[in-house]
Length: 478
Image 1 (cartoon, rainbow, N blue to C red):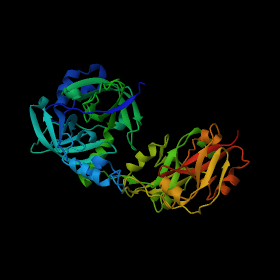
Image 2 (image 1 turned 90 degrees about the vertical axis):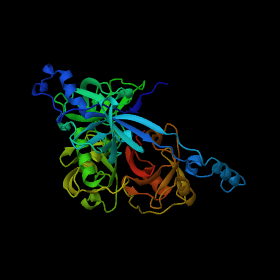
Image 3 (image 1 turned 180 degrees about the horizontal axis):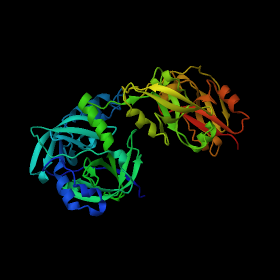
Image 4 (image 1 turned 60 degrees about the horizontal axis):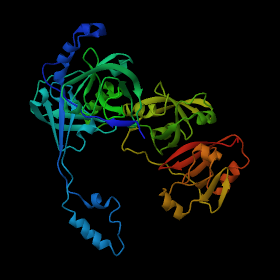
């Protein structure tokens, strides 16, 4: 079966004068001389070569993260000795080629994080590889797939300016320069196909889409506009063949500026934190929540003592705008929050039980990748039963161990879902834990049965699944 595959890339180029900007007449695409433009821009584009040294395999690599699968059995010692015999095995050395762009005369280079991730040595090559210099990794941002390098022992370099990606428009002409398949200094042209693309690469996706040919080896290379400004860093493609199908993605230059500035100042990215877990507002949820359209971000969980909690944001609120910017899709919110300076107070527009309101939130610093899970109250029950196509059971100690549930989770476990039932159509699944029905906490199967029995229309459930909470609309009209 042929499938659409998202491929990450890798890229490169050469050397000359700074700053590298095209003549003023290049602002008119009809008068652009691409040869002159490329001659001016190419010296700032470099090849990024990496080497990863062999590493000795540990027991985790041999037996897996769970350790010896025969621990506690008569075969334990035999397989321990077997593992020790494999202890001299090593990973294979790896080399890769990517691209980068010099953004300052003192030798700062931007590339993709996946180009240099895990590398023991990084070398930046100019002029098709005839000149090369060691590079130091200054900092990385894995979520935005960016890394900042510094060329050692070389100054007064040609560089390219980072442009204003907020001014980029669909349809404008662009050039990509890089190192596809190791062919350094390769130039391709095209247009901006779309803006604000979310391709599922991370929580802060906001890619520029282009049809300029981008292939493996182009990763980390620049996407230029026709006045010679870098408007994006090429990062990924959609492909069926492994090569270009005319759908490539670049990280916007304004994101690059922000990340580079933070790495230079702090050594790592610094992101804003709101303290909510959110989910997409589907059409069914929109109807249940009193929304005309499926827009905004539904708050399924608020972290205790977080900025959101202190501002009065509650579970079930729909965030419609953040600091004056409308939330068209759920994925808009994490990026806006992350880019907000720490300590800034911003207005957040909400819909709560059909009524609009505004809360002012003071953004804090994101300290970790995951928000804390707030505690919930309630008691375990001891009953089991069926209702609305659901087979329900109590959360006893055995079930908790099987589902690896935190002690704070209280509710009723879904033991089965009848095929073709309203519960099945809503997406409920075995192992879900129902914690609320129409905003009321439930702790026993009897409470869920009473809440659902005889009901007609849509009921809103709050469910714990896969280490987090979400809301599920259950249509009992049938």
